[in-house]
Amino acid sequence: MFFEFTVLGFLAGWLRGGRIKHLLAKTPRLPILVALAFGLQIGLRFAPLPRGLLETYAPFAHILSYLLLFPFIFVNRKLPGMYIIALGVLLNFLVIAVNGGAMPVSPADLSPEALETLAVGRNFLHKPVSPETRLVFLADIIPVIGRGKISMGDIFMAAGVFYYLQQAMQRKRVKGTRSYRHR
Image (cartoon, rainbow, N blue to C red; front, side):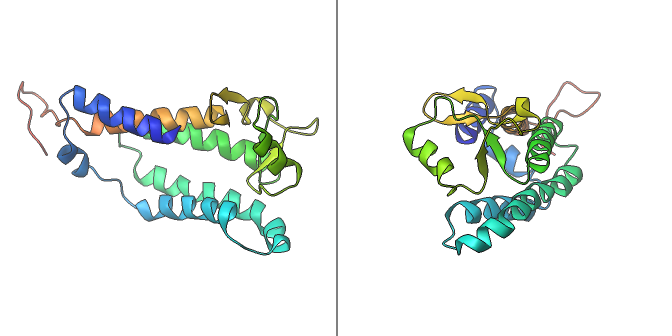
């Protein structure tokens, strides 16, 4: 989903007359925090770590991956779309934190492979929705064709990335004039 919204953001920015060079002039600060957050999540999903180690530390690492995003959002709060991204990160963080470090996912309409992964406990980032699940309305319950399930937080984060890209590709307008110039 994020890939599609990123491509759409670039396309919308280009259709509005934007250029990549304008985007490159507005790079976010502390991108290492985003890289670390995604690196943690990728490591939790694919790293060949011992099962006991993953069962013990995966919930903390998953929560930490979201905590790393909050300082990034704060220092970049003036960039377009950052408040939308912040809302998505906050929603996902809340549901993950109150459910023990794993994102609850509705098993309805999941592929057989995804159901098996959830059933045998090989997915340390997700767990099936159960009667004990808190904030179910923020969990991965929204079906996406060919993608499984997403959450409201995912939607806000993807929309924020889309908005950021198409806005950041535009030239900055100088206040008080009709001309545009790159700053």
